[in-house]
Image (tube, rainbow, N blue to C red; front, side, top):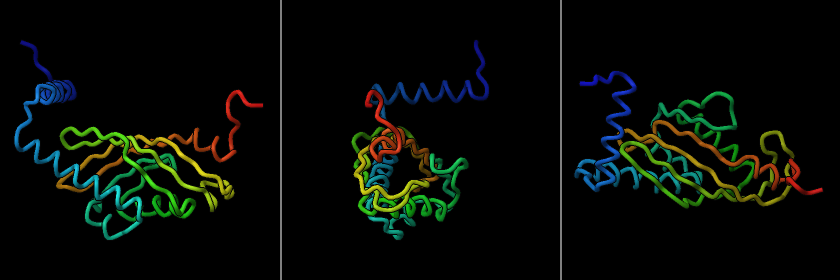
Length: 173
C-alpha cells in the first residue's frame, strides 16, 4: 500500500475528479457548481465590458486576489480590482473582452479571451497612440460561493506592444 500525503494526495484526488469528469461521471452537485460558475462568468464578462461597478460587486469577493502583469504584486480587494479595470478602460475606453473558449472544473474556470480596443490615452507609461489592438488573454479564475476570489491574468503584452508601435515587429526593418 502506498501512502500519499500533502500535495501528492491533492494531485491524486485531482486526477480522480478529472477522471470522473472525463467519463461523464459528474454528480448533480458538481453540475450545479459548474452551472453557477458559468453564470458568474457571464456576469463577469458583462462587468468588464461595461465597467458597471454594481455588477462587479455581486460577483467579486471583497477579499479577491488579482494577479496581473500591470503590477509586480497582486492586487487585493474589490477596489484593487477596480483600479486595474479603470486603468484599462481609461487607456482604451472602447476595450472589449470576448470569451473565445471556456474550460471549467470544480471551483476553477479558465477563459481564453480576445481583448480589443483603441489606445486613446496613456497606458502603462506609454503615450496615447490612437492605434487599435487585438490580443489574446488567458485568465484563470477561482470561485467560492458564486464569487470570484482569485484571478490570474496573462494577456499577450508582447503582441500589444508591437501593435501599439512600442516594439518592432520581428523580421521587419
